[in-house]
Image (cartoon, rainbow, N blue to C red; front, side, top):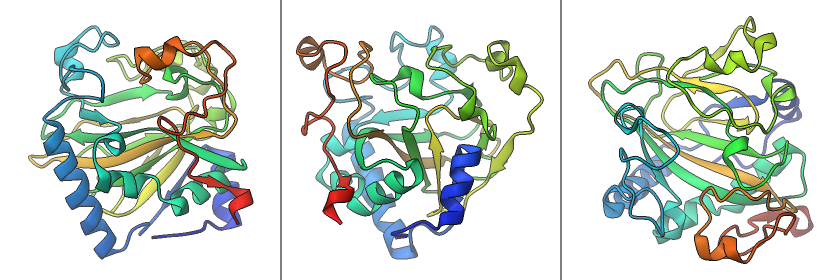
Length: 274
C-alpha cells in the first residue's frame, strides 16, 4: 500500500479537488481487500447500514424513486462496524495519514465507509456533491474510492469537475436523474470540462467532499465494484443532520457538539502520533 503522497500529488489535489493514485494496493493487498469486502457485503445480506433494516434498492427516504436509484448501485454502509476484517482495512493509520496530508489537516476520523457496487447495466450516478449530506460541515473533508474491479468508462468509472470544490456550498441539492441538474445551482461550472478517472483494480482516487463528481452507467455484463470511505477532519462539529448517525446518538447531540465518539468516528491518525 502506498504510505505517503508526494507534494506534487498534494498540490494537484488542492487545486483540482481530486487526485488519482495508481497501484495504491499491490496484488496481494488487492486480493485481501476483495475477499474481505465481498464476504462482508454477503454477510450483510443487503442491509444498508447498522441499526436499520432498509435494504439496498429500497426507499430510504432520501431518493423518491427507489426503483431508479436502486439500479444506480448497491450501497452498503459502515461495513467496518459489522465486520472485523473490514475494520482493520478502513481504520489503517496509513490511509489516515494520506487523507490528512492531502486535506492538510492534523487529524482524521472515518465518517462512513461504503461498498458501491454497480451491477451489470446499472444506471449512471448523476453529478453530485457529498458533503451536504453529512452531519458536519467541513470544507476539507474527503473520500477515498478504491477500485476492486477495473473501473472503465464503459462500466461506470468516476468523472470529476476539476476545481469545483472551490465554488460549491453545503446546500443539499440531492442527486437527481438528470446529469445536468447540478448546474442549475452552479451555472458557472457548466462549461468546465470534466475529467474521467478510469482505474485499474487496486488503484484509487481521493476527492474533496465538495468536488462535483459522478459516474456513467455500467454498459457491460460485469459488475463494477468499489470500496470507499469518507473522512472527517478531527475537530468537526455536529450540524443537526442525522445522516448515518443512530437515533440514540443524535439524541445526545446538539448543534456545535464535537463529533469525537470513538465508537462511531474513531481517530485513526493524528500528526502527534508521528
